[in-house]
Image (cartoon, rainbow over the protein chains, first blue to last red):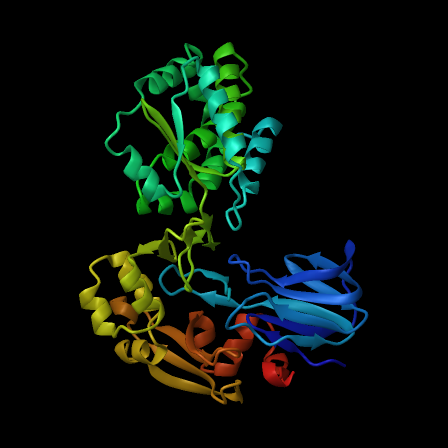
Length: 106
Length: 336
């Protein structure tokens, strides 16, 4: 079984099976959006299956993939993501002024 | 709430699709669409001048007379259809279009330099609202025709325009970095034209260059921020950039838990309790950690119910929406 991976404000948790849902096949997918364009992108030489359910992304990686941060400076290391099924989580942060919880971006 | 008609939705979608991250300026197309508006309004188009940026555009026009012919033609273009359409225009489409065209970058850009951005965005929003009325009078058709030209000018990279009596001054759309719906960039200008003129914004608040760099480089003490920054908005933002240890000391925070999982900088997460947060009487919780790529310390706030559990690792896991076991199993980024 793979071990969980963290890439900035995103965590990939290994799971055993894909959920039900409409799957798309891609060789590149943004796993962590950044509104400043500094996305966290997973690239694979072979198609990956991606299902999004209830604002959560699930990815079936067939062949070793690379998770990189599209930022010129202060970027995160590029990680190798092993074949397997992954559930993507994004970090949330509480704001003590507004009392609201929102996504963390980096 | 009224539904959005397909035509209005299509208009809103086009507004949303305008790319602020990497704008391009097709000068010939913009000029063509602006001239077409004058033709439709039935007034002669004055000499067209293209400024490099909003500041230059404003410098050009500040001593010029506003084109009264333009204003008159616009105001009379509607005729009697105006009141009918106006009464039915308010509704979902208005709100949506308004939020799209105006609610994010435009208000901040407007604050940065007074121009006619308001007119542009407001007119675009108004057009979507009118399209949503489903009304089809001659005046409305004419107005929408004019406004479609405006939309196409925006799509071709127009950012601002100044319809003066003797000149029509056009300004390209700047690159705008928008985060969580607000202008925000902590590595430079959030609004910038090709000639590097631009404005600094943090969390939607405009900063002058000197103060901006002091804030993002964490060069200010908490006392500097509280006594030296007169704008309450700027002060609040500056506090968000304060060095965690300085802020926690100022807030009289108490360390209640140290995590067991070291980060890349070998320092684990630390969870703090902040009683009487900013004089509100409520207890808040914050955790400090180090960026895995830059090793820069930073602070995040924790939902009070989770913070009260007094477990730094659990607070981190909860922020990611994962179990503590999964969180503890994650390897540091440079070892994964």
